[in-house]
Length: 161
Image 1 (tube, helix red, strand yellow):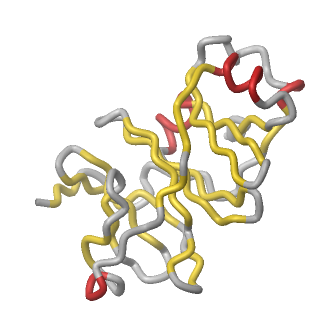
Image 2 (tube, helix red, strand yellow; image 1 turned 180 degrees about the horizontal axis):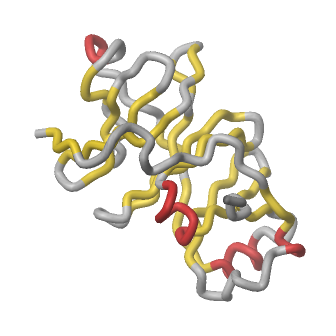
């Protein structure tokens, strides 16, 4: 059952993320601060949970691959997906709906709805084929662990309001 909680994109995704090198990280990044770490073709990015809690979705391109980094505060899961379905690049937003206490995403290109925890399409153009987004390996780790493992990595910056 889908539960409508907010209008679409009331929780605004990050569509134009900016990054700083690990060496230039702001002082608010404490050593144990949790981040979603994503590494694609040697391109290492850290997405602080403190930012993802407010935006829930970041549409990005990492290592040349269009990705969406997601975090659902209700189910405490950070999952990353490729944004390509076939030869179509999608951008995702927050639908304002929940299903089983989990974020339901929507894509702006086809208006399809997607279950965040599984990447399964729930309704829309891709439903007939039961499309599932390709999940990319990512993990939640402490900032200090990311810095140690990826000293040339990058950190998602806070959005200026």
